[in-house]
Amino acid sequence: MPREQKQVRELQEGSYVMMDEAPCKINHYSTAKPGKHGSAKARIEGKGVFDDRKRSLSQPVDAKVWVPIIERKQGQVVSVSGDDAQVMDLDTYETFTMRIPEDESLASDDEIEYLEYEGQRKIVG
Image (cartoon, one colour):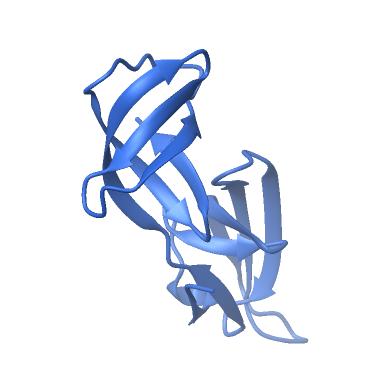
């Protein structure tokens, strides 16, 4: 699994974190002051990178969490059929089928950027 451990205090909005065994992009990060009974707590709200589900996490700032290493890659559209696109990776020349996001319109020979993590892929705009 391509991931690493980081302390909660090292996280920031826009970065990635594992929540409920799914990679999520952090939308909101806030901390509460340390109280009489313990250390400062961080509240993290995120959205699943591949499933778009909202998730939240509350941890002490010195706790360790898993951070996924999501690769950003370049590809070229080979063909489009319905909601799917046949894409060729520009580094490895591997071809695969990806779902086209609803707000995107792709045509053959378009160059795209996509995210990949553990066999999951998603086109980014």
